[in-house]
Amino acid sequence: MQVRLEDLASIVGASNVITGDDVAQRRVDWMTGIPCRAGAIVRPADTAELVDVMKLCHVAGQPVVTHGGLTGLVHGGEAAPDELAISLERMSVIESIDPVGGTMTVQAGTPLQKVQEAADENELVFPLDLGARGSCTIGGNISTNAGGVRVIRYGMMRQQVLGLEAVLADGTVVSSMSRMLKNNAGYDLKQLFIGSEGTLGIVTRAVLRLQPRMASELTALVACPDFNGVTGLLRHMGRELGGSLGTFEVMWRNHYALLTEESGRNTAPLPTQWPYYAIIESLGNDDARNSAQFSAALEAALEAGLIEDAVLAHSDMQRQGIWNIREDIEGLIDQLAPLFTFDVSLPIPDMPDYAAQLEQAIVERWPQGRIVVFGHLGDGNLHVSVSVGDSEPDTRRAVEHLVYGPLAKLGGSVSAEHGIGLEKRDYLAISRTPEEIALMRTLKRALDPLNLLNRHKILAPES
Image 1 (tube, rainbow, N blue to C red):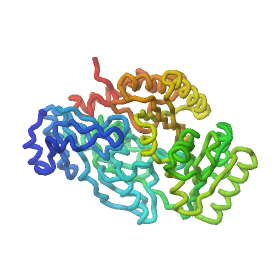
Image 2: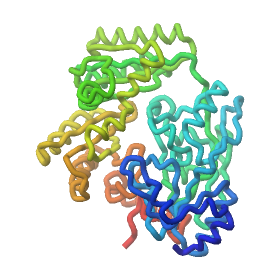
Image 3: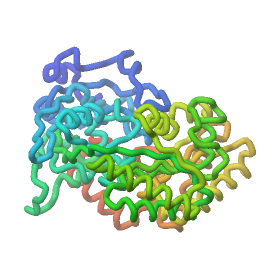
Image 4: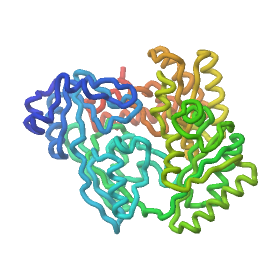
């Protein structure tokens, strides 16, 4: 550690500088359970305290790693013993809500679910939604440009941020806290920090865009006979529902059957015999009209042979039962551990062949291996879980080559929404050109010349 802990304590208070065994009691992510190895963890209460912390770190040449909700899956929160972890857990205040302008100003450590609930109390909605909503933070959502289940309707996290504040490596505050929907005054600097995984600056506050709360929310689970049925159904529902289509999530049979019939963890609303299952949601303001439109669209899809069977949720409990199958990541871990998880994007028409060829390659290499697939199909994002019997580094590397290798030819991406971190760093060139990576390095050197912020994340060390 280059920075003196006593100096940090003078800024944030002794109780907010965590050291020794208390550091190792914390985990760097929820999935692997790897203990934190940082030299210390400091917990600033606000932007001013973080500014003073970063000024000290800059003078001392102290590398830092930012911690949010630690729900990431790419080892973005890992810290070495010579690094200082900065946790934003105390910066969790919702500062203001503007119901007329449809905005909310929050600190970066605020959990996503807290933001959703505050919006709901004001008859509004914050549309970003993902399974880790109770733990993930707004700062983490911004730093990874999170997606979730309603991207098809509302877009990625980038579309939900009107303004933000960030602290640079030397303690400089970049405050771009605009509440305006339209602001073409020069460079849109906030975009530098959205999706940059804390490598260019530490997001401390944000102005979030809220949406009207829909009076009607309808959910259906449908079974499709083949992938042509899935893609035909996506086009059909988009056409018939128009702007009210809120969600289109697809589960391959290997996911649906595992988490219902095979494991007994969830009740299967539909038989497990079909190759694909889709969760479809419609959001509208007129419940009667929305219900009639939704039912008519499903009936037409059934008549056209796009679906084989369907069940409509008639209560919150039934709706949650459907979503539990899709979001039961703990069940995947329980049934498949040890496993490797991936989130990739690729053209929708290429998805069935990609998944089938990957499964074949896995089984040929590891006869006991299996894959499980689900995804946000409407935005081209697949989540792939692979289990081959062990989790050794050499095994992971071999699996990664099989998962990522085909994406270059398909024009896909090694990361759809989880970021790069350390885990995908060596595969960045599959999805980004040499010129793009060179420009990323230029931005990194300009904003963090001492390489203090989340060093070695996204970009490999230069030789």
